[in-house]
Length: 311
Figure 1 (cartoon, one colour):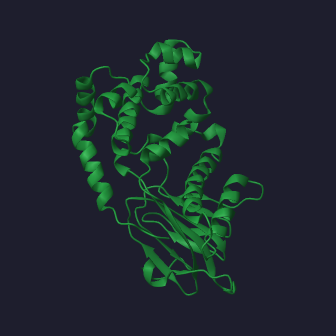
Figure 2: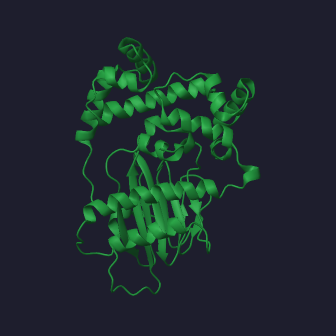
């Protein structure tokens, strides 16, 4: 997998959910903070997004707003409109609803592990605004159209599989659009890292084979740079030295395997580059403040306690 896909997979928990909603003026809704990320896509009309900090943002038809850490926010037909609880005003959009004066949108949420945020996502602003532009991001627009059709109403064969799959694709396309829109001469951090062929090659190597006994020199060879030049460039863009990031990513992969599989600890350790189960457990506890076995138990308890939500 590529680095962006890996970063999403590492954080994703549970099933995403979405709905197609309609609001009649005057209206203002408040969304409370959630342990995940949310998005809004304006299909008809327009509105104002009121972030927890900063000025209101106008959203027009086709605009996408992604909130990667969902700190709570508001939506309204006017920037100074009083806000009510979202559940009291949002209602499903119907095919026969007249569009005049109303705002129709796709709203959705992803449950993400905010305790283990990949730095690629951590550097995103609180609100990622992707304005509608003719000819820009056709894949994103295609995913929005397909998702909207699935949410038009009624039961469709395969809908239980189609909806979460489309939501996963939409998340990837929203993030891709954000990074692609960064001007090359202004790109810093992970936006620069993903565009730097040398750094990107090293990152792909680490993500493809986290269990390989990588060294700075072997990663520099993948990047086709000298050891010193590679170490400087990697650290400057990624924000951490190569082996520090390697360890962080290994522990992230290990946590995902412990949470999502029944692999024995020895197999998990081997997959992330540890020949000794004891050495792996020590490194894992240093990173998560929990032994691997206890981490797995806690993750299972958390999954069972999480409420089932429907679009």
